[in-house]
Length: 469
Image (cartoon, rainbow, N blue to C red):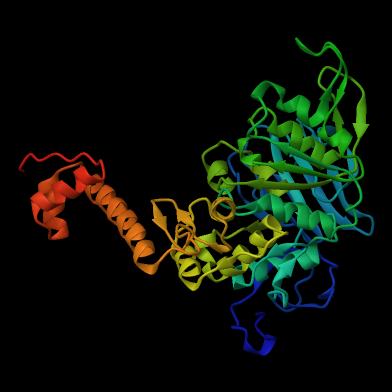
């Protein structure tokens, strides 16, 4: 049940970066701009990506100078930077970059320039130092969604409704979304939900699993290849960015992308251009990119396993999908939703005992594990001719009545005797298993006579070790 706006805690918001000019009211989702100091205006920010000052950030303002001399706005002490290397000036057309007679030149996206307008989000190269210049952002607090569903994704927990609140604003745009979270949390389902609510819903949707494709073939999978580009390339083959033209590319497990392929993907994201492997022709691309990973990409960046500039390009809208154990209140809702999809022709019942057991479980496999457990329970119930589900959780915990099958015309005494025998057999098997067949240890735990336990084990064909401890 959604929480009314007046009852929400002040902290129940998602803070996202929204480019300047984005409306505060969009699609009925209320936001509150967290404004900076009085007089502050939206501008651009320059972030140093390499060299001695890597990580340094400066606001561009009306004018910024870059160089080695101390009187520059951004001081870079690297050898390839001149004393007064270049300047950035804000104009009506955008940020104008002017080289100030530097020794090693100024480049925009790899092209040396004397004077040029810098496209938003471009990488400026000062000597050999890379600087990312991108629009500064305003912090926008997005309230959780009123709905417990987003394009087929179910969740009434605050953490999920907060994600829904962000996606209600972001999905209709072309913003790049990076989904991270444990395996099985439903990142791929969320990606398809974003597609369903976007303007590209009826256009191609191409999925590339970066962790499943062979290392040597991943570049071809993304960009395609020409005939004869490598051994086995007997025909030309288009890649994901070509196949998805006008639509969406979903890069699943982007954290597994090899380091040598990362700059090529970065170039596509920045220039909207690519070349097939083994080809010289440049293709323009118009796709939206969604990405997902189970890795912590910020840690991967710090460890040198993932490019920082590519991370910034992908994490325009970063969202962390919570594990199932972090939203246990969603488990009954998810279970019923999964059962409805799994068994459309028959209504199955989850007892309160079964639901309690599902909620108590930690679900290391998250929603995927929950689906597997429920599907197995449905098959067992079908085999037993019952509609009440008993689930077998990892670790051997069993719930429900699916094991009881009563026969018409059989007396109470005979029916009870049958299940007394079954209980006795299962209990003895479990007890002896706990003690590796040691009858003495098992008898002490069960507070039974050792000889009696041994006789019961023989009766049910169970083997026990009579050796004393």
